[in-house]
Length: 277
Ligand code: PXL
Image (cartoon, rainbow, N blue to C red; front, side, top):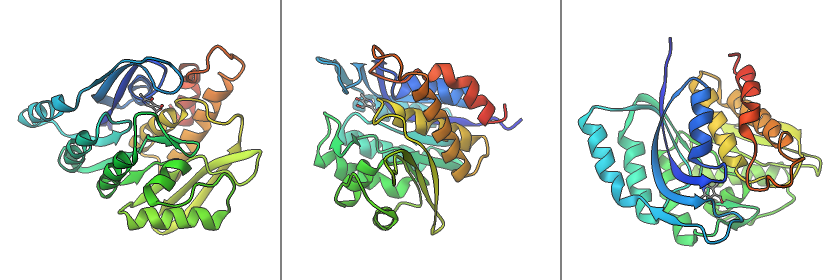
């Protein structure tokens, strides 16, 4: 049996259904061993809760990595998300560059912006640091906001295929190889994912339910990673991520008390069906 081991590096938001509390269960459910390196520990995520705690784990990273090196531990995939500090980005780059097996896949979700705005703890300096990670990726998974911050392009709410093509070209200039651009919407009723691979662009369009459910970027990237590690192509993994995330949103939108995340657990059986499991 082909059994893969992935490392995911992102924060623990103890409450809020994002980052590691989403990635660990989703990737594990896909039948993939999921190792974690927490970038920081927060009481909640930063998108709507007030007065959250934040413990930066940057200084623990080198000793954790050194222990893994001494144990000969390597990963078939490394997937990074929300990071805890600018200093940490250099440690994460080293992990991406040295801790993979020979054919490991490096997936980077920039995880710093949405709706044209940076998440509350980030600034331009963090965006510049994140740019240095791009050449270490095999697959970059930005949303349109992150693609604009990284590439310096103007953020637009309405755009055409030429605009998306120009975002891809700018990201390739920064060292990106394969790019999965999420939240690409050409009509008010639809959204989708545009995939740039080997100079070719493919688009998967689907229904748009609501704008910006919290944590859906992490749900998407986790399902994408799980599918890719199961041997699906980048485009098929991008479609699986989209179909699963849409179902998670559908299972959540009727419940206004659940504003802080999506009920991703309730759609895990559907994800397994998409994976033919
Ligand atoms: O979903 C991205 C994310 C992850 N982690 C933390 C966040 C956010 C988005 O706001 O605040 C702590």
